[in-house]
Amino acid sequence: MLYFSIRDMENLIEDLKSKVLKAENRVKGVEARSALLSYTNLELNDALNFLSGKTQSLEASLHQTDNAKIETTKKLGIRIKVIADLVLKLTIKRERLQKQISSLTIENKISTEKFWKSEKQDSVRATSRIPSGEVLTKSAARYQANKLS
Image (cartoon, rainbow, N blue to C red; front, side, top):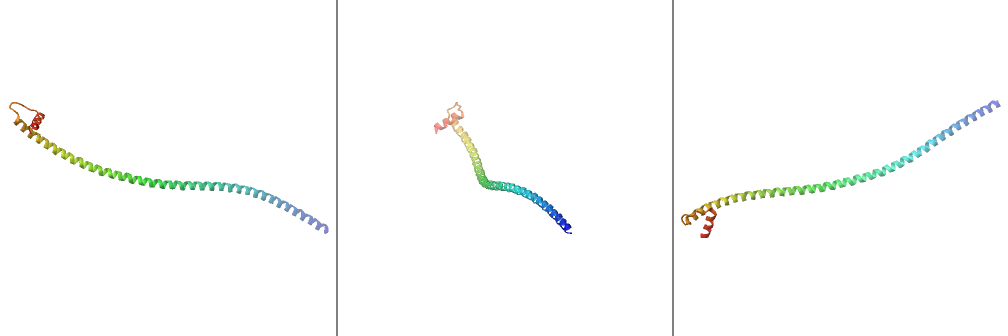
C-alpha cells in the first residue's frame, strides 16, 4: 500500500510538474503578448501625440484662416459701400450735367434764333443805308452796320 501511495504521489508530482510547465509556458506566452502589446501601445501613443500636435496645428491654421476671412469680408463690405456711394454720386452728377446740357441747349437755341432775327433786321437796315447800286454780303452788311452805329 505504501508502494501505491508513493506511486500515486509520484504521479501527482509528475502531473503537478506538467501543470507547472504548462503554466510557465502560458506565462511566457502572456509575457510575450504583454511585451508586444506594450510596444504597440507605445507606438500608438507616439502616433496619437503626433496626430494630436498635427490636429492642434491644423486647428490653429483654421482659426487663423477664419480670422483672415472675417477681416477680408469686413474690408470687402467697406469697399462695396464706397463703390455704391461713388456710383450714387456719379448718378447724381450725371443727372445734374444732363439738366445743364438740356438748359444750355435750349438757351443756345433761343440765342441762335435771336441772332438770326437780329441779322435779318441788321441786313434790312444796312441795305437801306447803302448808296444806290451796291450789293453787300451779310458779313459786309454787318461790318457796315457796326461802322455806322
